[in-house]
Image (cartoon, rainbow, N blue to C red; front, side, top):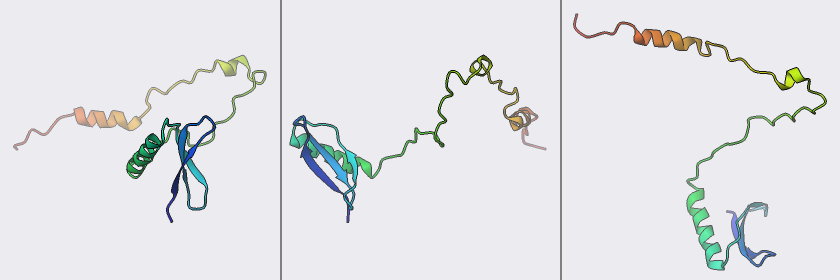
Length: 108
């Protein structure tokens, strides 16, 4: 069984819709629409775009650590500067050297 779109009127007398899973779990709630026709058009747009929608992950791979409390950090820790090594990609220099070297011009 597929999910279901439910059109309803919210506390501000605006039309909204929610997408529910087959088990009744609310998966998404729409923005407020001025009229029922606009809400139905919103449902049509979701149906059209959801199947082809790409996923953009803006979250971090792990849960971020909480920032340290102000009294826990020493001034040296607060103003620490991370130095980036000069040779970030060791193989890049070798590859660039090989590409810049003598080139085969054809012939014998």
